[in-house]
Length: 115
Length: 111
Image (tube, rainbow over all chains, first blue to last red; front, side, top):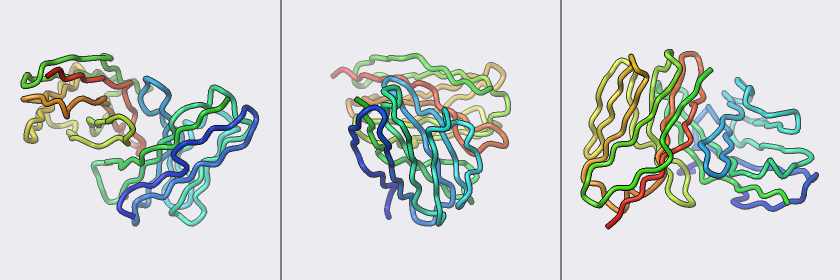
């Protein structure tokens, strides 16, 4: 597609539930990133994929968070047993491997609210 | 570790220049970036500078980099009401693909 697409744009769930957030990167971009942005804060790195594999998952806060990218394109961020502190905007970005500048192209985000 | 700091808020009058400042701690930064976020929208890259440069100009935008002091600034000339947004400084360290972002500076432009 023309840009990074994220669904859903808004998700309200109850504490303890399971949530999946989807990201469709720019066509041809091999690198995909997940960030989390809490209110009044900058984006906080969660995980980075190069192709199908997670090249850096050092930002995942705990084992309730997991992400996959099985075919090297669409990615899903999965959050188990959600907690109120998980409420944030989850941002996805992609970039081209050949772009030495490392520019990231962001989607509009999925706003998650845990009640 | 990497840390990027920004002031929270800046208010200017339309037509004035705006200067947004950022400090970072990682001396291995290769690229530094300025992103803009408008309400309800994703982050958009405004400009970037390679770490071996000290200045970059792009139309109304001027980026200054003081690598010794690890200080980055973004100057917006002739600021317009459409420039009202949150501006994020970000850095890319050697050997990492992910960017580290500051907490953002909210720019308010008064008519």
